[in-house]
Picture 1 (tube, rainbow, N blue to C red):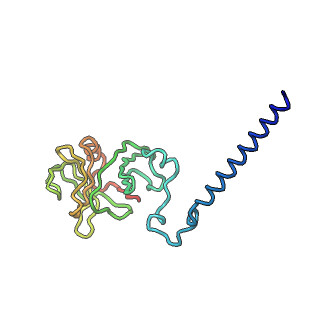
Picture 2: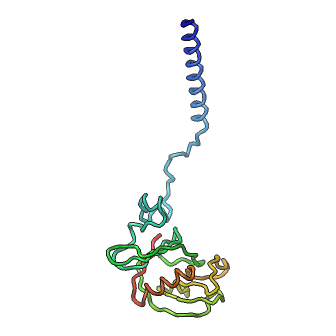
Picture 3: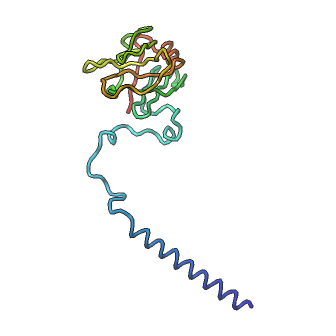
Length: 185
């Protein structure tokens, strides 16, 4: 009986190895030629500073290339804001809805603030914190009085970055005129 059992096991092992080898051959034959090959050109995003792996795993984590000191950090790619206090401590982070036009990455200062006004899209907004003006588009943070954070009309050139009202209150208290704003990709 031992002889026939070991023969069966050996036969099954050979059959299993043959099946795995055949599947590996098929998989290799179906790999695209471009897999793993360099693209030959560098996209604008490829030249941006890399976000640490920890930040990719935790979207709330403050990205490393975000400046120093007390500041507001705005991630264009992550649609997220961090309010960073002394000692590089994150006081608050929240998601935002960007306008249809993005500010250039760089360091800015809050230039003006307005308590309440109609937004460029006609929505009544509050706690407007502006930090840049480029090509006739004002860039700043605000909250819609009605609490809406819907995406803006893509047909309009809008630089308003909308948050919830609670997050808008926190921004208003944190980012006074002259406060540093760091925009990262």
